[in-house]
Length: 228
Image 1: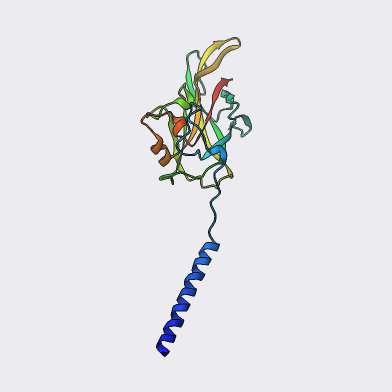
Image 2: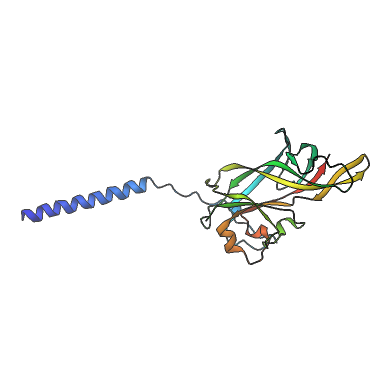
């Protein structure tokens, strides 16, 4: 009887310990923030629902001059921006001054991004930043060469509702032509869109090919011109 009593007390203590452990774990769980309604996005045709929620929205792109002053912003409702050659961070041919000369100018850019949904799939290497010069912008295909990956993948581990700034560089190309005021740069190859990919979700969505805007977690249109 004494042995049964001891075994009973040990069993009761074990059950109590398990319950305490379970309650402790429950108390420290962080509930997942639900997706924003705007994450229920559509494909580029504006009608077909995307198979998975869009994780992010790009609030704006801010372009900076070489002296760190702000040149201007691109927003979802306002894609146009004039980029002065003289304000570029780098110019592939700064001495170019003859008609027909072609150069590449680069600017520092900051993207303000808000998470609007939890990932449908955890990233593998990370989130990819991409851009395109393709004339169709977000309709550029996932075929290699139509969009360009920028740098290494990034984590972007922010909760739903939070915003962050991403810093990177974007480039555009100019050609020198005769203008009303002399030889001036005109656009040779313009920026048309910037994208953020979840490397796993984009692979799940890609129909080989698909429009880049349909597999990206977010994109923003860009239409840049070039000034002196």
